[in-house]
Amino acid sequence: MNRFPTEFEDLLNNQGKAILKNGYAPEDKNDRKRTPIDVLSHVIDTGKAMDCVNILQKTFYKSMKPISSKIDTRELTGMRKNYSERLSKNLRMKTLEIGSSKSKSYELAKSCGLMDMLNSESLKIFGEKVANTPFGSAENNQIICYQHGDYVSPHNDHHPENPNVRNGYFDIHIMFSNPHVQHQLLVYEKKGFLNGTYNIASPAAIAVYRLPFWHYTTPMLGKKGYEDQARRWLLLRSFEMGPVSKKTK
Image 1: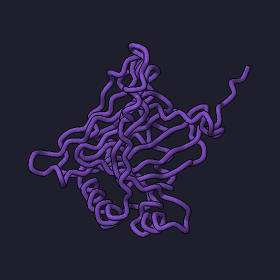
Image 2 (image 1 turned 30 degrees about the horizontal axis):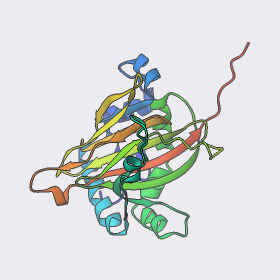
Image 3 (image 1 turned 135 degrees about the horizontal axis):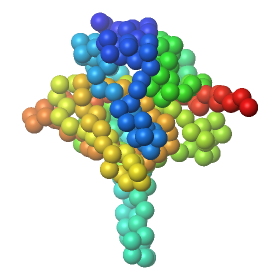
């Protein structure tokens, strides 16, 4: 496979296709109510996942922008009261927003088939099956690459200034790791504590987020001796909330 398939469904193995056809039942339905996230690690075909890693590295890596936001020392030196500390969102990663149809990033995504796959109906349906609710319009597309030591600090992805998503929205994360990745965790809010975890360093996984909620990613670690070659890729597509069905009286 030298380009992304037109339909997201074609990346899935039999287990993933069964979810697309029959729906998704989480192991703990009560847990879903408390923490609005599902991570599925065994639904993408292994061989195709490695092809995706190669396509992403070849097509996008050199065009991606490194971004970082260090801890502001004033968040410590400016404290005047015990236990009043507050930490702004800080991070380190490489990223690329897929912009308008006239942008270079869009042209790259179109050239390798990624844009068609992200726009495919089967991707949206898969997210709706996992979230068990309809999605609205697509909001944005982004590619993220984590390298050795890259991370995102605690944040909640709440956007109260944006009318279309201020009451919540959905993210679908399609994730791929090359063989040199050793470890990275997603830590999320569970029962009021930041102690829920998912291993997101698997070769391939899909996550469906019902945002906003508190979460962060630990520093990505490469395998010893291969730290500079380790890459974890994340393809992100966001959706507005879908229409809420009215119950009949």
